[in-house]
Length: 431
Image (cartoon, rainbow, N blue to C red; front, side, top):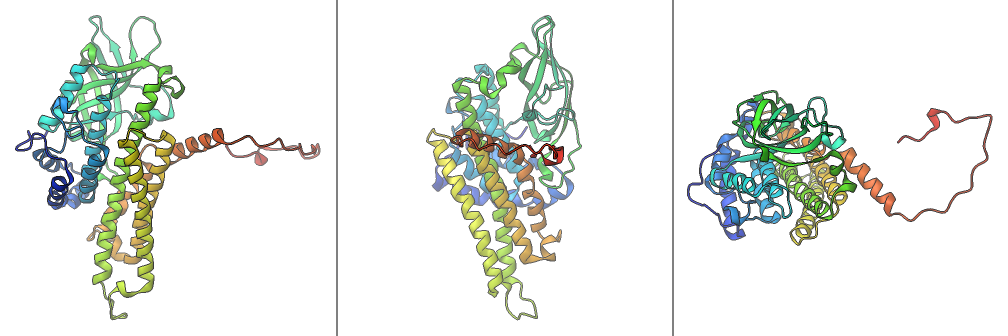
């Protein structure tokens, strides 16, 4: 848990105040980014700095001491933090998303737990994340019952056992929202949902296994739960498994899902776009200063270099327009369908990767040297397309939506059957 807010209980989020503050904080947040990347160590000091300026709990409602920050404001913070250290930005993004989700109107969380977690984030900089992925199950977005089990006790409380992986921010988290199934002792089928777990509860154990190519300082380790005792009300949103199916959601749930997907797309897209911007900034300095003897002038004077920089500008401009539109419509209360947010995530993350790849074309071996930050930006930005929701899921959902919207084609005449050439598996379309 990070330090109590020192002088800004509720910071001004107005751009004339916030943007200069973020500009001042950015070099401090970046100071140890390379070191944390090399060591795979968690940037605790960055969260202490953010909390000292009241920036950890800004998405909490004003009723619980927060600022009820808009998506546009949260995006400004994430962009500045990610330019400095994307691992810090990723953990902060998860906290922003979780605090907003648990406080959504019509949500199922008990009001006293909403307030407890929200105020802890505002007052003490508590970090929050949901733990869903398991070694055997993988991501629950692919279906299947979780192996993590909450067993109902005679007094109505719970005992939680399980094993989670990719638990982003694990070394710094205060609260865990754990995806689990129930065993309730009455022969009823298991329910599935979220259980609120204090990180310091007896039986919660972290295994330091995160040794990733990118976002190495995010502390996305494994977490094990062994007979963790939880009060009855810490089953904060548990439903029959069928009730989580998209076609079983209430209209309010579907609206909330679309809103949450838009927030996630914008903040994660902003994170990876900021990595690409950092790569662009370093590359601009490099081509202005690098003057090979064979050229007798800086690389920036070459038309080929200028053309590639123009491609970088075009990719980043597309990201800017996509993220701006999605931010504006969401803050106006009209987030797009989740499939459209998914396509925005696909576009922004792939454009960000393309920016860094083009930067490497201009810098060659210098860009891949560990003495320079570009190779770190490359490793970090490659996490974007594989960050859930992943490309295949996004594109399949978008393709199905497109087919559902398309007018049916007129029936084509059947081709004559060629009895002598029966179809084989090699002729069948790939699905």
